[in-house]
Image (cartoon, rainbow, N blue to C red; front, side, top):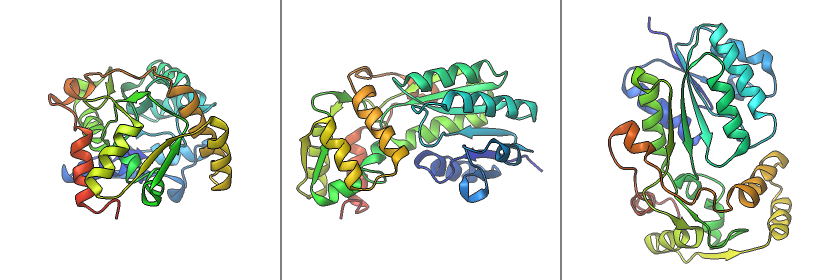
Amino acid sequence: MEKPILIIGGKGKTGSRVAERLHALNKPVRFASRSTGFDWTDRTTWATALQGASAAYITYYPDLAVRGAPDDIEALAKLAVSLGVKRLVLLSGRGEPEAQESEKRLIASGADWTIVRASWFNQNFDEGQFQPMILEGVIALPVSGVREPFIDADDIADVVVAALTDLRHIGELYEVTGPRLLTFAEAIAEISKASGREVVFQTISNEEFVEGLKAAEVPEDLAELLVELFTVVLDGRNEYLTDGVQRALGRSPKDFAGYVKDAAARGAWK
């Protein structure tokens, strides 16, 4: 029997899509998450998930931007290689120092690696933390004119599946973006128009953002991550487009307008 491909974070935005595509290719899949006994904070749970896998797709919780992520990625990669799981594909983050250090640790581990370095997902607006704000009609964030090349999770999943199933992607770093730079205000305006729902974007201070997270009882680890992403990473450092999707798949990435049209048709913001 063919060995399964391990997906760490199989219920996430990209992990679930990767699983769907692998199933369509008749590839056996194994999931690793807290519900299966895998825990990033407990390294004794890692070997059971890795044992007997042919390859692994690694997504880190809550995000590679957090402290300690590089140590965990290094430890997991070395463990995987020692167990015979050399084919490792890592979802990384653009402009995140801890993520780039994690990449270096993976590369040095002896694994047959591929890195998919991604920006903000389109799906944050309909499957993530921004959807409730859109439904309430106001998105208030500590960002103004910085433009972001939002990437579709389906494009990320296609790149990951290619990397997991085609040896030609070994040793490649694919920095993936959408085809267009948008401010958050412009993105919200497109969502508002396509959904027929009036949604207002407001720029707020970092202090107001933090207080809002506390009031909403956002878990501390997630709150710290969001503050990091908005106050450090979203400073213009990622304000450029890349050709990662084209290099990996030979096609252009999905435009934000296409994502918004499809999400609105599904009733994502009704």
